[in-house]
Image (cartoon, rainbow, N blue to C red; front, side, top):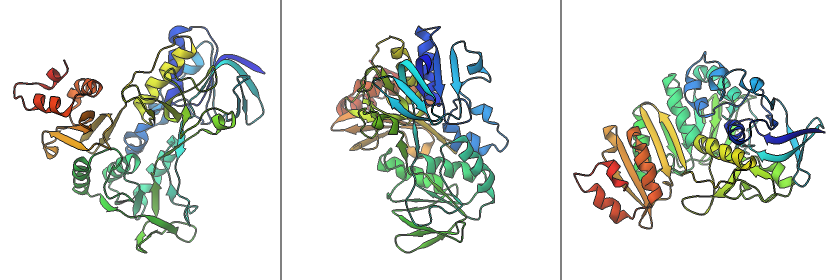
Length: 410
């Protein structure tokens, strides 16, 4: 049995950030990082955007660390193409699919998630893909431009970002979704409507409120069948309907699991000295107080680093406001807090003007902000959401012609 001071199961941004967190407090402890992918930790947001749009882009551009970084770090061992299939939380050991056993004083589960698939007739046909890995993006980069009809199933992050990227590659795309509007779980109706119009003006077609019932074709996809019986011709379908957290290790080890591995404010699970962070973790929200699971790049980086620091003895509570970003066509979109379930949306500026800020409120208090081409206001909006202003306080400030955005943060 091999020994490490720290073990990290997972090979993404969260894992790399945990190594950084450990090293901030412990410069010599041995760290083992296990990844079931062939690459060192890499960034996933570019997979649906810049990486997909650049045919000759090498994978090295995605990597979190410079070439050779893990090999050069004393006491850090990265084991690629290594699947961990068992965790013993009491003994603090993990076992690989090859039967090798490792022990550590502290273990972090940064196992992320996998693309959700559709259990429908014909789902096994060639030409039906998901997007989660660099290999997935490379397949799309190769086959999408030549496909006679591309259907994107899902009008959330993956579907909308892919629609923008594929249009830049001059691919004809149709977006299907069971919801009646785009990005329904993230944006209030006014913003969703604006984004749909914006995409349609750039050649993206939509069939919203449409549910897929089957995929058909002779070995390869040729059409997508809807519940209404309508058929849509397509040689390629990309399913982007969410993420399934990889919780099997935690469940089998008896850890608390609730659509994610349950952790406390220190990123520690229900088992002592076993931690979880990033996409897979369900944690106390530092602003809103309830349990939440966050699937975004910024959270993976911040939560992974905190977990690493706490594994090394810091004992710090997570205090990071939920944030995500997207870049589609000429729109830079930044979102702080919670915006999808808002019962009121207050728009500062015109959505069609190219720059606007949308303040989202629920039960009379600000819960989130949406910035469209307003990157200069990010710091102020982050603090505004943290302050939990009432709607009346916010409106009073916005209606004052002498008030600059920065002055809303007192």
